[in-house]
Length: 328
Image (cartoon, rainbow, N blue to C red; front, side, top):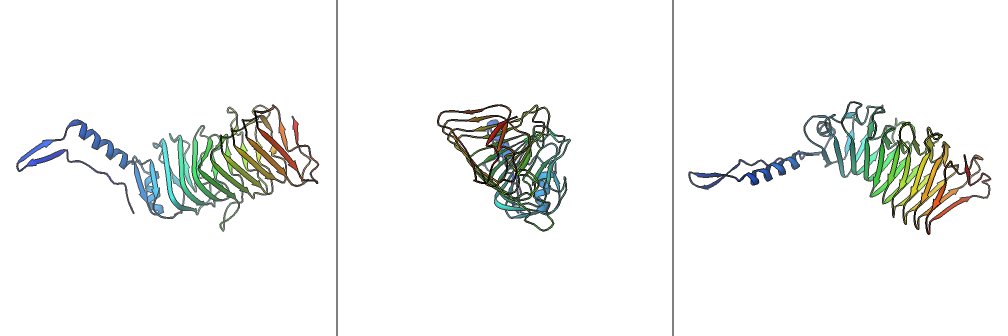
């Protein structure tokens, strides 16, 4: 184990035998600042160390894994930690327990507003995901950078937001014995995708994204400029949108971005899109392969706005007789 290392100065320099001098105020301040930066980090190699780093009121806000770790039970992030980063350093976290607090979680009384999960491979068992945000909390942001996930659900943050960066690969299915059934990629209010993002969704009864639970926030799905996004929806639909009569899902595909969806059904199992913005030279391709339902592939209450060079191509297999798009 490499615990957090704090370099402390004695605050003195020996100049010669029997003579000493105090460090200058600026030098002491620099030492103090360096010590604070280092003391905010912890290197952990097992579950006990991970729990101590996250759950205790110790000032630690960045945790770095030095080994693969088994998440043996739930860990409550200490309420005083406003921002937390878990850097896997390319190691693996394996979930072992179920339930709303059977994972790393942000409690309803917490001041935590942001959790970053970085450079981590996750074997999931719990459909509350590796980091769960209690349902009563609004506006918490979960950021995922270079994350590889296999399991029943990555994100549970029903009144908050999820952002993805780097290389993201998500496979939603039951992969561990005793696992929860495969559900969503994410339960959130808003999703923003950057860089490279790939989803394979094998859930039988749930859509890939469940959004709109909070009645006071407009749900959104944003693919930023230059991102490359692919989603393979094997059995169900892409979106399930609550409260869409008042707050439909707004969608944006950024400049030079590509967004490709392979699905056997319509995109919206419940609800609809509001406005869809396709920015310059973006490319959106939706392949629908079966005649499972007669529901239009895209339902929207607003409009589709394509900018210069943008492409939207909805491709139906010959046996698919449903409309490509309709208003609601």
